[in-house]
Length: 334
Image 1 (cartoon, rainbow, N blue to C red):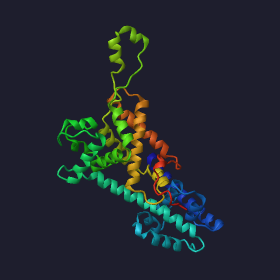
Image 2: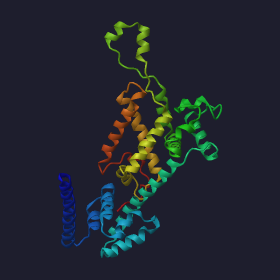
Image 3: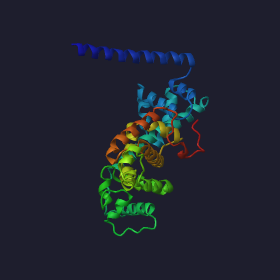
C-alpha cells in the first residue's frame, strides 16, 4: 500500500509539473511573442548548449511534427523547418535567424543519429580474412607502425610487436569488429608521430623510485634490475580496440553529443568520431602514466577511472574534447 501511494504521488507530481511547465510556456509566449524554439535560439550561443535544448524541446513536444523532426532524412530538414515555422506561426521573412539556427541544430541532431547507426554497422561487421579490403587495411596498419620492417608472413608472432595478443590479429577484432581496425589505421595514418611514440612508450621499461632502505638491502645489480622491473606495459593494438569500445559507449549513450555538437558546425561524421578516438588514445596514454599502475592487471581500474574523467568533462556543455580537430571552420552556426 505504501509503495502504491508513493507511485500515485510520483505520477501526480509528474503530471503537475508537465501542466505547470506548459502553462509557463503559454505565458512566456504571450509575454515575449516568441515560441520556445525562438527563445532557445535567440538566448543561447551556437553549440551544444543550444542544440541539446532544441533537441529536448522537440522530443518533449505534443506535436508529432516536432517529435519526428529529430529523425527526418537530412534532405527533408529544410522542408521540416518550413512546416515547423508554419505550425508555430513564425514568419520566415521576418525571422530568418530562427530558420538558419534550426537548420544547423537539426543537421547536428540528425547527423549524430545517423553517425551512431554508421558506427554500429562498422562494429557489427566482423573482420573477414577472405576480404581483400580488410586484409589490405591490416597490412597498412603494420606498415604504418613498423615502417621498413617486413612482415614475414600473414600469420606471425610479429603482430605482438604492435600489441596484438596472438599471431593472427583477426581474433582481436571480435568485440569491436571493423570499427577497431578503422580507428587504429586512422590513428596510425593521421597522427603518425603520436602513434609511433605511444607504441614505443608502451614497450619501454619505466623506472620507479627505490628507497634508501631497499637499496641498502640489495646489491647494485639487484637494485638496477629492481629499478627497471616493470614497463609502461600495455599492448598498443589491444588498448586501441579497448579505447574504441570506450568511444563507442560514449557515442551510444549520447554523452559525446556535447563534444560533437561543439566541433561539428553541421552534421558530425565518422571523421569527427575518429579524431575523437585519436584524442582519447593520447589522453589515455598520459592518464596511464600518471596513474602509475603496477602492471597490466590494473588496466580495468585505470580505464574505468579514465572513462569517468571524460564523462565529467562532457557534462560541461561548452566542452570540446579536442577543439583543434574541429572541421569546416569556415561554416558558422548562426
